[in-house]
Length: 319
Image (cartoon, rainbow, N blue to C red; front, side):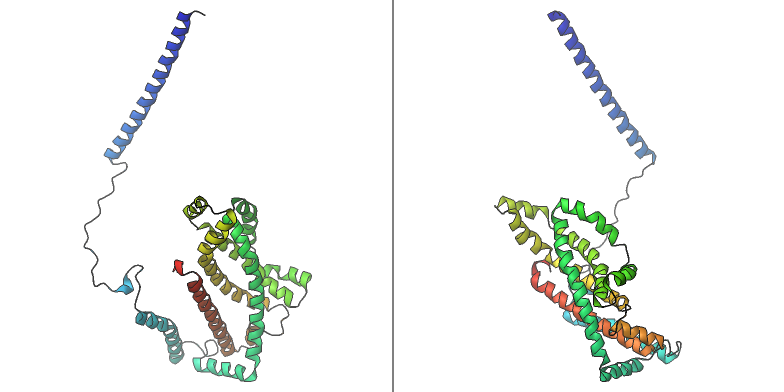
């Protein structure tokens, strides 16, 4: 091939590339013109301008301001009101007689039933039996779920390996495992503890992983830049930053453990608050049922406050 023919072919390729580029530019121009015509014709109206508003009043009440701290006096007043209002409604319904005492006992009757169980000693024995089951079952769930959640939240390989099966297992109700647990573990305490474990471990794992994934990537990159190794980043950056979120997950799932304990104590229990509630239901002793529910609620509130204080102490940077 001569030099003249090679030059002609190169010129032809250049002309073809120029034509293709010109066609592409023409297509983009026509598309932009079509979008502008649709906008002008009203197919997609422009956003209306925001109205002019006055600024916030400087003396606006902090009670109705977004994310604004309120005085301690108001905080305690609202906390007392959260208990006083339901109690007032309860007393009012009893005074009006709209609901029979058999279905809604008076606060006085509930208090008398509580005193009777305290004097007989059965309340403390049942409370201790239930608390032991919750501490053991949920404690095992925390021991398993926290390390697993840290692995899932830190390593993408761990997330890909564990999340699919855990996401499926968390939808299986723990009560559905009771027949299998009775066959595998018998009718003793292990089956009751296993119900609490299965009811909380999967949720706590995923919530822990979410807390760990919330650690900003910039903190990890800066740690590597400053010379930290992988283990040091995990111990000194990821875990401390995610610790308040992990404690919040524990608070939420501790309440779930107390919900499952009533179901767990249906498995041939000889003591426990759940067992006492079922016996009271059998004899329509609604005053005892209310008293036991109040005890469970107060104990759960104490645990929740303790976990809040622990979170505030070990995670002051996240307050």
